[in-house]
Length: 341
Figure 1: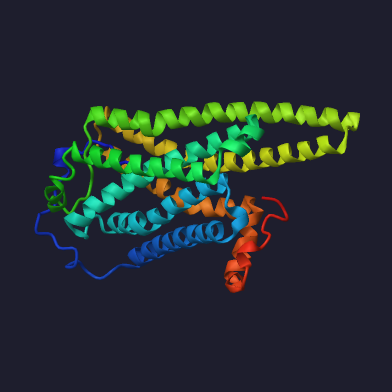
Figure 2: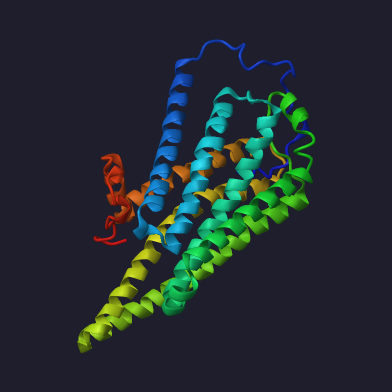
């Protein structure tokens, strides 16, 4: 992810002719670590692939909110394919074995997918707030087409922004020198760019999400009080249907809040560590960044588990996919929302 720490010059300690394939046989600890890493990667890829298939296949799930979840699942899937395997391998072997070209691709993918995930989660919070605060306007203005445009824009913006971030800090031109230096694949960012990145990719999105969910909880409390009043007064059936719709939106907001809370818990330690490492020059800074970066990667594995635990439509979709029932005719029209969304 966004490794915006400033690397120290003396970190280059191994000889440049070091080979990845001339080491001794793997120890039992190495095998155990590789097995654990493979399990995490497999969980990430398969879990997010199930989310992608579910939302793409079943027409009932073609909603603006689910398209944002689809975008997040695609980003998490790419993390599992392009980032995790090589990150874990480098952690276990303590050097980069995949060449300068893929080092550049890996750094760009890490930065880009990190940024996309942050903006995805921010737009999920905005979507839930808009759905609760202006339900009628939301139904008419926030369409599938609008959501596709929004996701396309922030995917492209993130790609160009992070390419510029790497380019203007010399990580593209000097990538061969960085890899040749002790087999390391790390991005170096100066303090100005690191501060800008910290604010735009972490501080602002976090503040937006925090403010939105404070408002969402206030709206939910107001609606809960209103529902109690209508129950006491035993109002008409049409009002009860409206209350049911509002309750459904509140449940969706609560599930999104769980997703965002886990996201916060995984990202906050990393970004704080990276920012502090710019001003506290200690040898342990790189170790702390590496440790918290594992937590960031793990967020891509946890998201499908959240869907499995709290989204009943995902549970039903997984059963249909695993049992190959989606191969039957008109399976895309299956009602997967009958027990809640």
